[in-house]
Amino acid sequence: MPPWRDFSESLPAFDSQYHCDDKVAEVVNAAILLRRPLLVTGRPGSGKSSLARAIADDLRLGEVLTWPINSRSTLTEGLYTYDAIARLRDAQLPLKKGEAHKPIGEYIRLNALGTALYGHPKKAAGNPRVLLIDEIDKSDIDLPNDLLHVFERGEFEIPELVRLADRLASEVVETADPPPRGSSRSRVPIEGGVVRCTSFPIVIMTSNGERDFPPAFFRRCLRVKLPDPTLEHLTAIIHAHFRQCNSEAKELINEFLKSLSQNRELANDQLMNAVHLLTVARIPDAEQRVSLRELLFKGLTSE
Image (cartoon, rainbow, N blue to C red; front, side, top):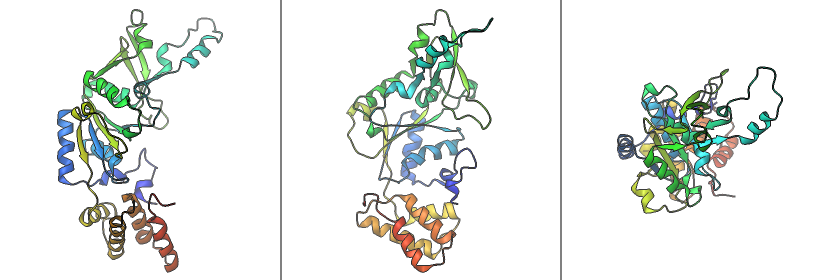
């Protein structure tokens, strides 16, 4: 089994061996120091999403909060969810003597963006969260600007709690943090129905370049394009993951680069899969090896 597909732990360890060049590292460090969102572009499979995991691992900032974007994504969806139907259903159930209805906080959950703005459950820790907003170019036209307003303010309201703030000074809600095995999700108090950021998150937004963004969006974030792979870059990746780069691995790297030069769409993880299957798994049948190479290096846009 490839080590990056081993899910025996909470998350695969693929990104612990992330490799990027110095120019990319400079922009990443600038975004972290300035606490500005980082917009990452690059060819498919170049490691845009993996960059967030690499940052979190390197700085020991815990789990990455991920918000995958589609054309129906809204700002509220990223911030929190309120299950009004479940609350209404529970309110209609008969209560036992001395029993009370569940508090409204039981029906509210902070989602990835909301949890990132809140920060770690133990506020005293002071460390920022890492938030991955994946494929933001798939969003509708308003979401990028809506995001910028929240990032500028560093806070947001939960209207369902604000309406009750005169009666409920604080309400405990669930976060988007994945629960430890055998445990429930973490819960945090919300004061006055407002989530206020104390340590601005490290925000990584990925884009495949499928749309343009307004100048106001570009003005408020830093941008970096992951470079196309080179022989040195791919060799370093193979060394990092396999602790070696034998002659067959080098041959696969050259074949991968040749395919890219012919304008075939390939992802770096296709090379990783090929190296693992053909150099680690050691499939002896020559005909089968040729067939697998063709399969693993099939272009992303091929039918």
